[in-house]
Amino acid sequence: MALPTIVASGNGTSALATGIRILKRGGSALDAVEACARLVEADPNDKTVGRGGHPNVLGQVELDASIVDGTSRAAGAVAALRGYLYPISVARAVMEKLPHVMLVGDGAARFAREIGAERARNLTASTAKEWRAQLRAIGETPASIRKRKDLVSRVWKMAIDELGTVNFLAIDRRGRIASAVTTSGWAYKYPGRVGDSPIVGAGNYCDSESGAAACTGFGELAMRLLTARVAVERLSRGASAGRAARSAIEDANGIASPGTRLSIVVLAKDGTHGAATTREGVRYTFMTSVMSEPATKPRALVPRTSTK
Ligand code: ASP
Image (tube, rainbow, N blue to C red; front, side):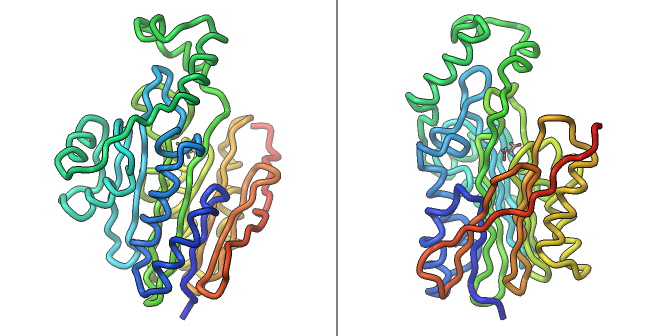
């Protein structure tokens, strides 16, 4: 049986000790990944997740999150959720309290209110300032952009290369696997844009029989390829975690356009893990129940070579 282990994208490092504490006292993988995700969601300094995450083109912070229980294969997700502090917990409540998997937008916010989820003003002074600076650079103001009927051209000008997400994959003492992904998505996106993070199978997937996988980067790639699901499928067919991660990025490279990028973390049910990326210098992080602090490792680099 694998040691209790959590694997995360690099920006999850500071949450790992909390998750491992839960696993060490016999807590579930599901509780561990949710607790880790909540810590990053509440951190206003992570501009890619939760409170303090980048807003859409209109200055609204729309959050996406999903959680998967690899043992029951139940899943819950929210997308384009506004005004709540812990999208991952709302996603978990969708899984546990409704006969549904995913809620979006106003429906997700209505449900969050109904279950008494904690509200938050997710646009911080610092992300509001950056949004206004981006607007200024394209000759807009908050008032002018809100009045516009045409946002398409603005999004092409604004939607810069600022993405990010946090991934957590965990195995508990009983060998149960769970995964959580949460994000504010693509900075200055078109309102209502949903990425791969809340799409079960695209940005997040796990199965206690095989392992778990989750993505960061251009969600549009992972959504088209069902990247996380395919990676877990490869584990089930005997690929190592490292091989499953590299193949996932090779697949993405086959359809990627210039400037896009994708990264993946993979955890196999025996506790081995791997990660791959299209971009140099991206690391991932992990911690097991016998480690006193998290460790980080470089991801395998699978650069895009085609000119497509
Ligand atoms: N995958 C996320 C999305 O497309 C963003 C990211 O991880 O960089 O929304």
